[in-house]
Length: 177
Image 1 (tube, helix red, strand yellow):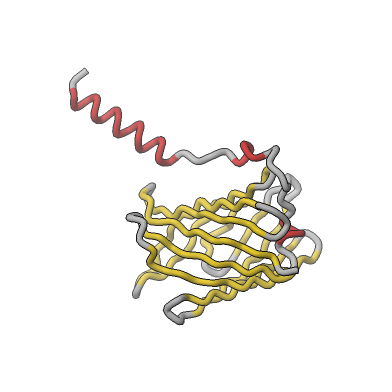
Image 2 (cartoon, helix red, strand yellow):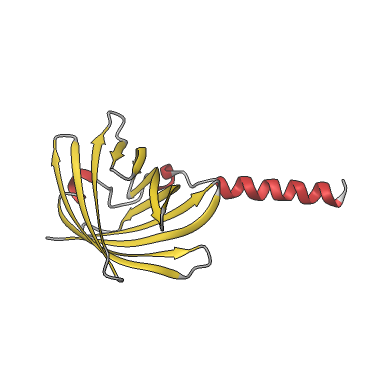
């Protein structure tokens, strides 16, 4: 096999492995088990940051989330405050499905978000309409949340477009008593 063929094969393998994702089922035995309707009920505070693909922190923020449920339908009313003084609001509507998954919608989510829980982990996959300057870009989110105890949850989301990693969002959630 020529070196060009070997290079092409190696590049293809790397591209395929970059698109792979962890199976949420790996966390099935992890405790405490995440109950969305229990954790996201009441008020939850969060602290977060966005890092670009080179690792530079380009945005820092806090979020206050007012959460409520009526049966299998939940509302997460999020108020973001950024370090630069700007504000943002996002209201999620979550619907528990018969299979235990969740469907989520919000005004800046393109279509629906699909959430799958296993053990202490939740994996959301969705497309977000992200404003940058005068333009809006539809970017993919592979969003992972891990319940640490009854108050603390950690979140890491990878943002990408056309399979190219653009950056990461990291959050720490704390449920108010």
